[in-house]
Image (cartoon, rainbow, N blue to C red; front, side, top):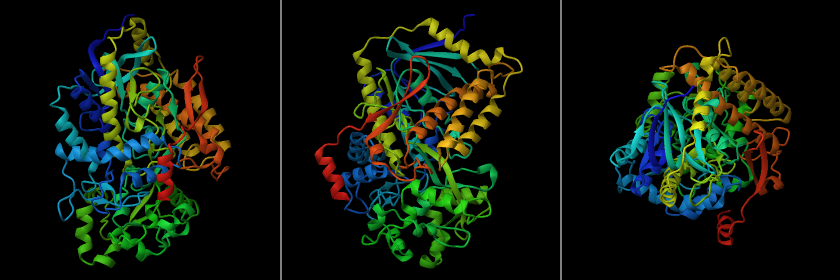
Length: 605
């Protein structure tokens, strides 16, 4: 049976319309390439709008000791030196220019007293470095990029999901997509494709990620023959809402801690002082008053322990909860109201001005006034450092013509991402991906589409309608989320990871028999069925890589191997699809770092 489809031709196809996708599309269009953007949701609804705290860039507006060198060293240290050093260098050098560019396009950043872009403290950053718009920075980024991008002649396709990348021999040729509303297939022929699909959070039960984050880009690249890297490193943000159940996992920005919020257990003890890593001791306050002086801008004060890296803070919170010292609903307390001791009556207005979204979020969703009482928070799956392995300069994968930027791309963050580096990552590498995708597109001819490939992929997508009485896609997704949360979470062991692999294999077998009713229009059950394959692919990749890395480093903690092992610091784990369809891992040695960058790191230590 032949399956019909609508067809579009372009030179650069961008899949995803968050910060990275919009910035890539703007750059590709500006470079003269005919550019199309497909997005799973609506324009303006990308998960980037949920990024709250700010974007990291060494502007040195608040502390003139900051520079790209310090930012580079902080990023490498936070990533446990598994980062691709060239990506970390490019990011640190180019982030200030990207922030100023966004400002020139209309972004309304918070300001210093003399009118410059204000910057706030954030975990893992030595100096105040995050340019921000209250606690709604991601929303302002998307608004600005959209307002700029819609005038560039870019072709936008909303509520359209990419199902399969198409190839012409070894090179990329486009993508088969489907419209979520009408269920119709759309084929895009493209000389270059940029993946900007975000993360994998919906593979877990508790996540800050929106419904779109089902690992689509990771799986599209993997099945097209590209390598995935660092998939074992999943970041659990320390502070997500834990109550009420309907909003469990919703992000509580790190900006709360950047503005003076402290973490306490049920006994009122500020437990972060109990566990300060040796390599951060000379930078971290050992008493509350020194931490407060840091928050209000005393250059001689050391940062409070609540602003240590996210992996460390998440494990400390997890430890308190497991030990029975948590809050009533299974979290701990995050308290910003205590600053009334320092600011008096002005504290209430200060909190509402600095953290307007957080104030309204807790007021409306939990009935809590954060200016007078503490919040209950706990770890939530937030980000994956792993993704498509790309060239640091161009963002092209090892499939010619396939590029990736943002969370779907690996390399910048190593074993752990610093807060705020994600938004500047979107701008820096979104721009590069768009620029080099356009250059690549100009260097090649139009690809040839294989009609048989298109028909096979379309038949595969429609297969759930052909089965009666099969598996329920919602039930399978829930089982996978429970499995990943319980067995491949913050703390991992070999026995649990092996159980997870067995469970994923069983779920994959059952997913082959998933069935849906109704027709293709307005059918969320069908969409859920099609999400299962990418969710299973990324879950297997995460679990296999976590099993292979027999140490604890960054966002990966093995209870049976609790220490760092130097031999595992010499390579990245790369996942590829073998010729027989199985998933294979290999150890890819780190590229030697130039002497001048090694010297910068040593100086910053």
